[in-house]
Image (cartoon, rainbow, N blue to C red; front, side, top):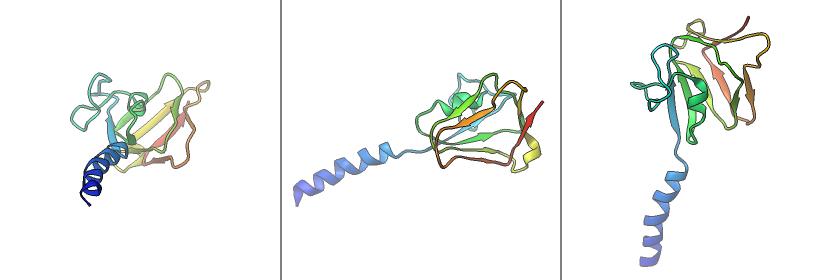
Length: 117
């Protein structure tokens, strides 16, 4: 019984560390990709938030986002506008740029507008 208790005390924290999930914040106006991606210290780009291994959600502050290269989503991630109003968060792509590629199931885009010019 004591061996089982030791195993549980070791195994549970180990597994919970593997299953961590994180929300990262992005602000195209006031963010900086050198920051930590928190609500108080947001990244500047969506691409930077998506490089994090534990990302499950990316929250975009009000503003316009114009990626300079295709943003690739390779795991189940939700990308959403922070205000809940699609007109407040605009993803813009030039005619020659593919804005996003989805390479995983379980992805979602919410409360934002995609605009090609």
